[in-house]
Image (cartoon, rainbow, N blue to C red):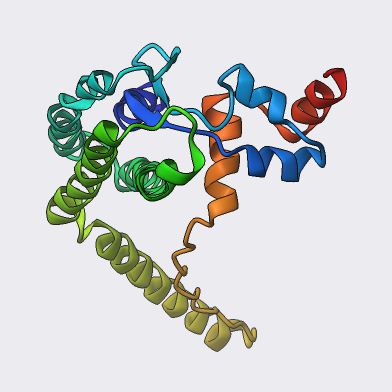
Length: 224
């Protein structure tokens, strides 16, 4: 199941244009990291390829490499629909929750990229803006399609939980009646959806795309 999930997530987080704002790295390290701009590590639009390698965007035409992403994401929908008929409810719930979490993260990140790249990246050109807008729209459209097919899945999970609690309460009441045991079953509070902050999105890029954590960043800064 984990390999299946990773394969699905790669179609979200691969073949995507990003940039890593120098500000967040300086905030983490507490040092001036302008040297990273010179080597293209920060403040530059880059393309994360399917194999995980990173290419610096040098021409606007490179953005057309993203145009097949909509088709790739549609294959994910078909795969999820196929899987739901073959796995248990808990496994499917885990799969969908992980998938939606990754998708929401990249929707937030691509929104930041399309809105701020013009002011914050050094290799930005007006011609690339349409591609930045496109990749965000494609991910949003994919989320809408998922809601169409799986929007009731979370409700099904919650409904099963309610029935499980009801059966548990019946058992507790029987136990109280027979053995005079006082028990209370608390109804779990619904989980609130947590919105991804700008800092969380940037740190996600540090950790997932560039494989850098706070300790590594501080060490590299001291070596400069």
